[in-house]
Image (cartoon, rainbow, N blue to C red; front, side):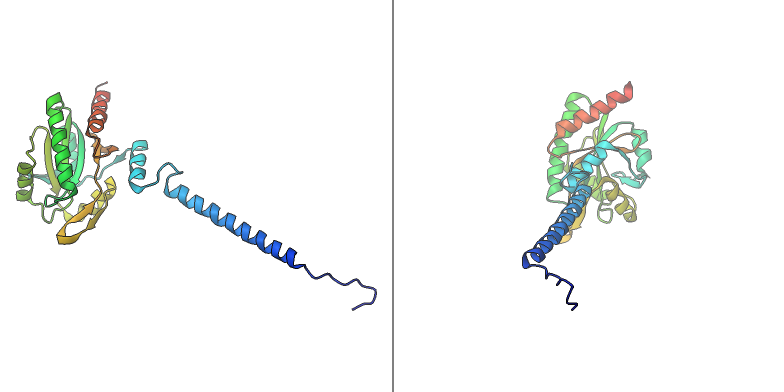
Length: 229
């Protein structure tokens, strides 16, 4: 070393430790920001914290057109879903079932029986209809739909059931409504359930909790009143 040059001081242990802490802190901040961004995206800006809430919020803000799929009714007649809705002309409260179900569909059936009675009691069956759609066309043939109609004590002027005519359309139907179906034991399915408000022009406009049938009727009624104005 040059005799006239000054020695370069070694970094102190405190300085080195401080730099390490700063780097760790910066990395933690970056990870936190990235995590918050991911959560914000997944929860739609923090408004929704479950997939079910998110799909309901999305539909309420921006109604979506449902796909025009072929469906078969309990008499065996096949028609396009959009055509059926338009010809009917009513606002529909829609649910999704499979007729062999012994769990959530049983609860839904009971709720729909209550909805049917309310519509009939209030004389709303001419403006609001109930529509159950089976996502299990492999098993829900015409005979199964007829048996379900009888078992649920459906009044044809208020409530009807249809099934997909083509099994290949199942994914499109479920995705359009945000229905998640998971195979379960004994050939059954686990699936989410709600009351879906669909207009005569084939748009899904609201999703209501299954335990709020009165709210579903009021939303459907308000849509029929808006259409008259």
